[in-house]
Image 1 (cartoon, rainbow, N blue to C red):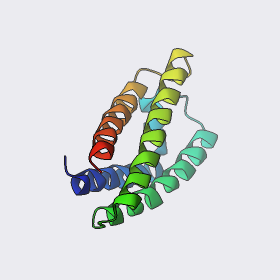
Image 2: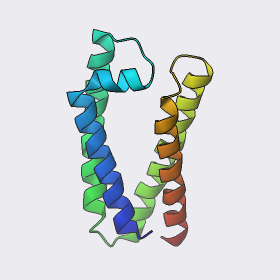
Image 3: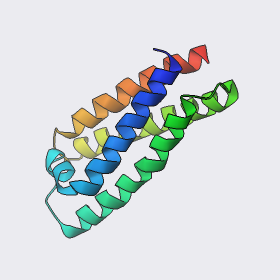
Image 4: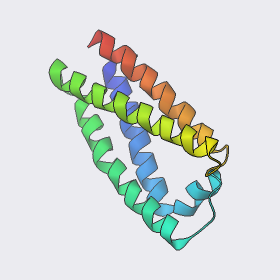
Amino acid sequence: MPNALLFRLSATLFFALCAGLLLAPGLFGAIFGLAPSTGADVMARRAGLLFAPLGLLYLQLADMDHPKVQRALLSAGVVFLITIAMLGLTEWALGRVGPGILVAVITEVLFAIFYLKALRHA
């Protein structure tokens, strides 16, 4: 997969997560098997805002031809995706979230694989 396409797909995913967490924080909690609460909604919306700058970063990166910058952001993306997938699996193993977390974990692992492949060619 060309890096520009990977970066655009990543940006789209990050913007979708931002919008989803801001507009329907309870939906994410329900998918992950969490009890509804005001605190969880507040934290979901705050977490959602973290995805907007990531989306912007990767969207702008898609049009850049700077290998060092691409490698740096691909490396950071791999660390982010692998650690968040590991956290999801840990929370599931401890019974804190339901099996819906596996949708996120599978997506994170797939993107991590794409990032690792892109790193080898960057």
